[in-house]
Length: 247
Image (tube, rainbow, N blue to C red; front, side, top):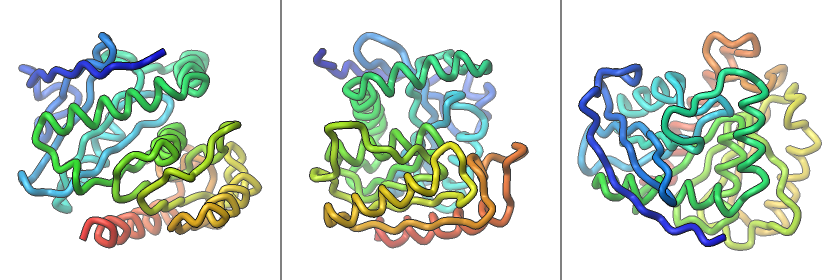
């Protein structure tokens, strides 16, 4: 199926919703379906960071990270891959939404490109942009990298690392940064090693870091697998990465 981007933007009249007053909820369409992202920009010339959510959809977590990045001087567009109002709370629903996209990689790519168009329509600097993702969002970041997206960098926090059958990194343009927990049982250290070998063989500029004792979702504030040390170190390295590739 061919996905055609149909993008429109609405400045929400309720900008003090759960997203808070610091940024703006943005409604946009991809292939006739509505999606609700989050946009914040401290300056019209600020370099851009795309954020891609975990399997529970775009929540206060991504908004908090977006606001943290805005405080550092970056514009941020948090992408919605599930659809406006789709924020699953049950594991079965989370698996359904992520499973559908994992089975339809063309749609996953179309949704990310649609979000890029939405950000561009807002005046965001898509010519100086990096994407970062968490867990399922990390897997989506790697999918975008493999698609040949014209972005300066791709950062993954405890993301899914497997490459789908028939895909490769031949078209990847920007640098890849992978930050992973050595104790991650969802995306194992064997998968981490396999990805490193694949990127090396493809000649992709990359950096891969593991944090000892860190489990899957080690950056999620308040979660039972949160590890402050790994979160602090990975966030510091991410900031350095942004300065390096967006200079």
